Length: 87
Image (cartoon, rainbow, N blue to C red; front, side):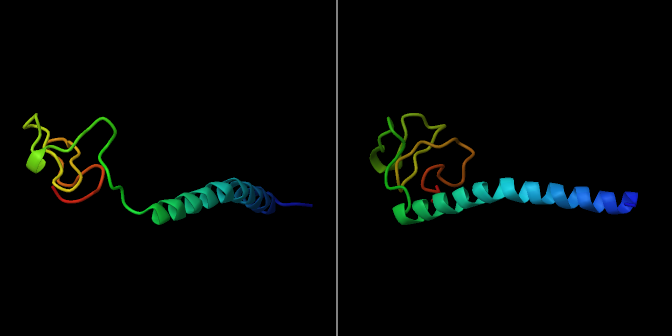
């Protein structure tokens, strides 16, 4: 006869295997995406529709432009939202 403790261990083990079976494809896709991004290198352009301003200046003083890639960032940003360089 199976005790409740043994049944609990059996159910938890089965659920752990199911969770692992579901997680493996997701984790593999994360690794593949990471390798693709690593091969592409860092972004070399600003977001579409945005053009770098002269000297890193923005038309809106509350949204400073990144001196590295020209992307407009929110006023409270310390690092650029695209290239992650310090503003």
